[in-house]
Length: 358
Image (cartoon, rainbow, N blue to C red; front, side, top):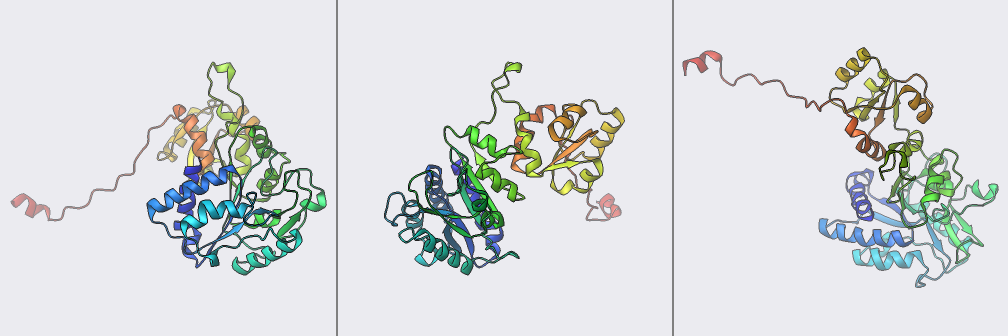
């Protein structure tokens, strides 16, 4: 997983918005998965001869320790990522954990606002925030069981005291800053995190990661954690595809209604029709969406149960990693073959009479 994310990160810098601007602001995190990600990013970067000359590095959070301390998130990134890549000091904007949390938070906020563009609410727009997830669903140094006042803080960087994890004093990006970021990627990996991830992705989840997901229109979560128990009723060890459906509404990839599907062909990944659909409508959908996979599965009642939509016989899934995962598990139920558009034949380069004469 970490290797795939490392490659995707370089792709984002190379071809995303970062490629069209003079600078790109990235906020890093600590943790074991981050160390693995850093090491693999170096491998990918060296293989591609990749340039980081426009990338400015910030931190999503920091422990209040000196930069040479083994607990320092900066130290880990410096040793594993920044120094091996030869990143100039001018592109490194660390949080100074050796001073008081309040002073470090204020200083880090000023520095980020100096480099990143501000949105209409005055929040700096970080191009990409990389987060891990703890066993309790915490991200950065935003932990569960905060007071309502703490969660609602508009501070860009917040001073954290009496953290439930050592060391007790920390500095972290606040929820508004993470919500304002152009992209947020979460790397969720490791034993003992299945419950936290499931809770974070539930409709009424209350973990810090759940709050981040609710505040944003899109959050990319990369994980190797298997969610949900095996489908014991089928005699198979493979979890049912329905375990992915609770995430669909939150990801906003569901397209409902034939007119919506027609208007959204440019972003359509595949179409799902129900098993109780009328034959005439099925034939029309197969004709309308001949160039897209059409899967026949479930009933209208199932769609109401899964997605809360009544009377739908055909839905679509917009292009996304989640849609790709769902289709991979449903493709055996595809009822059409791919139709590849063929260009019309080109007129002959010579007149027919000349061709006959020859």
